[in-house]
Length: 82
Image (tube, rainbow, N blue to C red):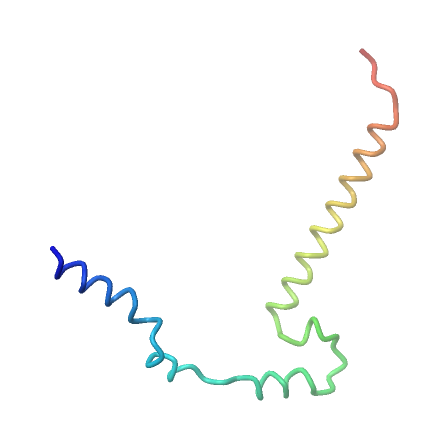
């Protein structure tokens, strides 16, 4: 039983050792070139299609929340019939 625990604990610890860090590639220089090029895009959209999708989703959520809050404010400002 102890041998089973030792073998499983080694497999859990193994991905966090320093020897597995060697396969990560530093992409900072590529990202710097992407964000510094002059293509008349705002910074929050220079990442590509994923950034554009996240921007539109965020704007839709903000617009929906603002509309809902104005609706609730209007609904609460008029007296209710009982």
